[in-house]
Image (cartoon, rainbow, N blue to C red; front, top):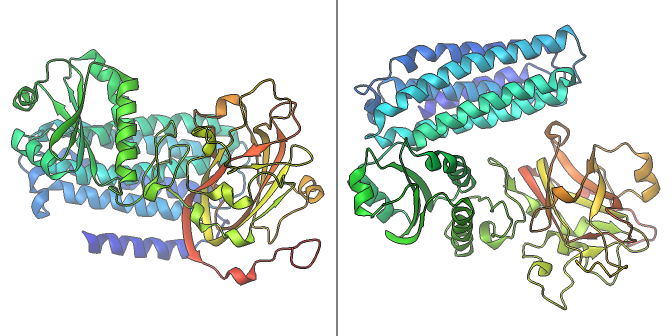
Length: 511
């Protein structure tokens, strides 16, 4: 199977090299979508052949599941090529070109949903064969990621049909989510359950029943929490159908539904009875913070939505990381950073990239780990990178004092302009005269409980980035100053580049 994947990737790269970067036409976009539709259509037949007899043969590489996984992997490879070809794609004019792209995408969604619904229907056959679940769920997650990215790029380029495309994309995402949940939630026997909780450092279990209304209400939150912790190898999420696994439920004295239990090294750490979303979320957030703070995670990790947890290696994160992307703030070259109009009485520019929790959240006094503007409510931050980056999201944290009587209190940013691939910082006049790569407008609702705004970038505009200028144009209020506590970058990093080619310009030599 690995050899087949390698061949498909090599073939994909060969196709990619035949199309000039950013020169793809609407007709070629339609061709790419139709190719994906054809591949999805071809997988419906092997999916229909899945049975309780041939399904378990996956353990020896036989039966329909290996072919399906290979087929899905081929779809991922083909979609990845299509995505690379669409980078830098010009906006598609309204009319027949936009309509053709929408029609092709709608047909792909229809065909792919048929395939996914077949898989969802077959999942119930394997409640006693949970080994099937994870490889199928894993490849479906890969499908989910490329579909999300491709849909985002289409929505960005085909403005006249953006709402229609978004509606189709959301519909498909919903079906993919159900399919992933169907295979991740395959039931286990008591022996398998006991083995899992004993051999896995942390296990979060949802005891449910299909007839239970509150269980269904809690299911989306449980799914969301499991996705948040998907990359933490020492934490597993498991759903147990109490009807099909009454012995497991009885052994753990499950008397109310839903019941959520957290196991640590085989022993019950927490037990939540009933539909209590806040308590479940709080327990999982504390668990993630404990695991990450103790070095129990392997690979990247997402913080809690409330921003109270730590990130990988003890790095504080103020907002949840998008699935499939990582914190790449460490790719900033600190020596080349520059902050204009900063108040000297506040912190230096480097505090913005500090991995510690902002002191304002712990109400620590005497620590100035933030920056403020000086003469007015504007800041210009230049960030050069050690590698060529693909930026997906910015996490901007601002924690001004909450004293309403302090007329000199700084404000949070309201309008931010972003500029990419500048060899040095801009001055304010130059920034005002330069068209930004993206304009960000923030309001009170955009800041979470940790004072962090989760800013989604127009992904197609932030590919192959070597530097970023962040221009705080104004603050949200009538004050004279603006404050920043942290800036985190989220995306993918590439090969390191030669930092000696960076140019930093000041008014005087040595600045």
